[in-house]
Image 1 (cartoon, rainbow, N blue to C red):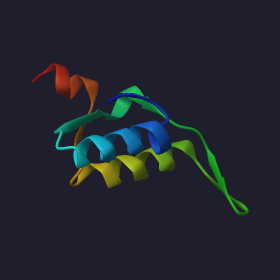
Image 2: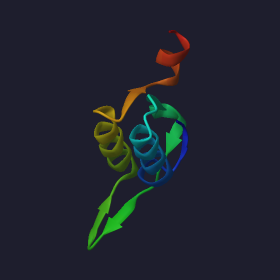
Image 3: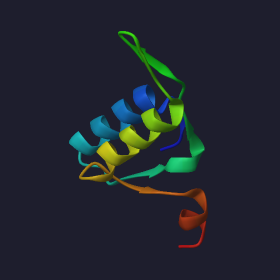
Length: 72
């Protein structure tokens, strides 16, 4: 999986694919997101991205960089 947005399409697609029995790989540096606002707090894009990658890493997907995947 790669694309935009980490907190929307990547998350939803990965979880749905896992639920359907697919073994997923998320290319962490080939995904993007943006700053999010919750109440009066702005969550920086890097924190949003890292949080979603951490949540997907177990058990939904293998999360790896493009270089790690290319070197396999």
